[in-house]
Length: 184
Image (cartoon, rainbow, N blue to C red; front, side, top):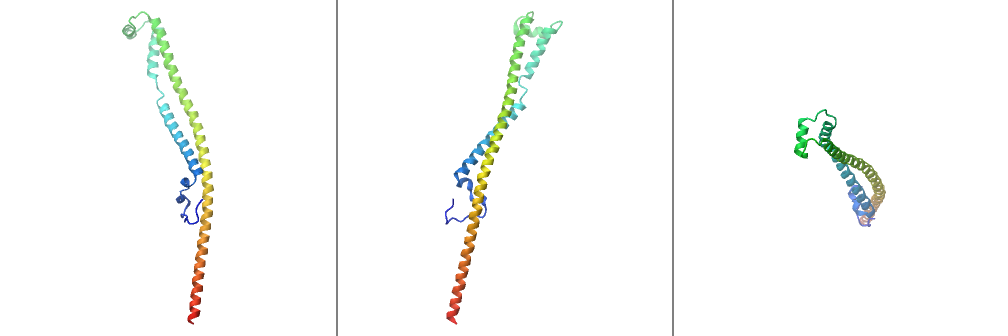
């Protein structure tokens, strides 16, 4: 623990127990790693949640085009122009509608995958927070054990200092009395 010539600091936090004891240092390292993981998962979850609008615009535009092709009495001039420009013909609306449906399904699947990732991150975050709490509890228990040990050592040191001071004081009084007795 501490050698007999070492003077203890006034307070436990000055004793630097985290670096003094390997098991306490290891427990703090585990807690720090867990804390870093929680923070990283929180950042990633916030980013994924805040950017959840992936593919929304594309899905809406393609769905509007598909509905225009499927349900419109007449295909609008804009849709006809779009089909002619990008597909090369304007009378193949069934083929274009089918292709648009496949594209929409692909984008919707990507969006659902994004939502699944958010849910997975939430579950991972709960597990990481539980591990962080468990690591912190283990660290605090060890730290309290060493703090109690420090308090015992500090009390013993103060008692030894008081005893030494009393012995020195008693020795000095005896020496003074002996000198006074010789002089008289």
